Image (cartoon, rainbow, N blue to C red; front, side, top):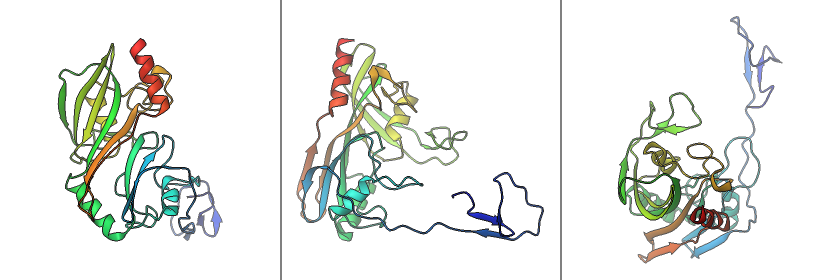
Length: 262
């Protein structure tokens, strides 16, 4: 809420103002802003009348949140005909963190939105990621089962130490050993906020470059080495099996090369 939006007896007060009792409070709510379509340069991996699969670049926020007025992926998707669900998040059935790149499926109708949402909920959409971690797993494959929620002490983080746990399951498989680092393929069974990053940190395999849960600045990375490289699901309207992939972006490919020669 902006400064001056709360008035005490008709006048703005500092945030630390203590009420004595009997004052009249006035709360001025900001005007709701309708999401506007914005033409963005986006890589479309698949497109038909029912849905779009976009290859999201790192640094692009999926949908508006808070006072930031910069265009988000949602603004660009609206220009591409995304529809269904929350008008502020048109067609969006799952998300990627701002600095995670890769594949995202988006609906173009309410029918497609409801079908895709159900498929995500029923774990029928296969979402695979490539993650470079610092450390080496104890086994070539593994399943991490640990509920996640807002951290008890830091509300901006997710963690296993939480008062609001939600079931979370992550699978991983070793793709390449790189000295003290390891390239993993990770598959989401559930889709909690920051799930992969939190789960890998919890088993002692922090994500390279991750400034919150991993090793910030590792390999000169400016963001976490996490890329949604494969998406496989049954088309909700045609029944066709879609199996789509995305190559590593230039920054992650370069970091991987540095890891191989470190």
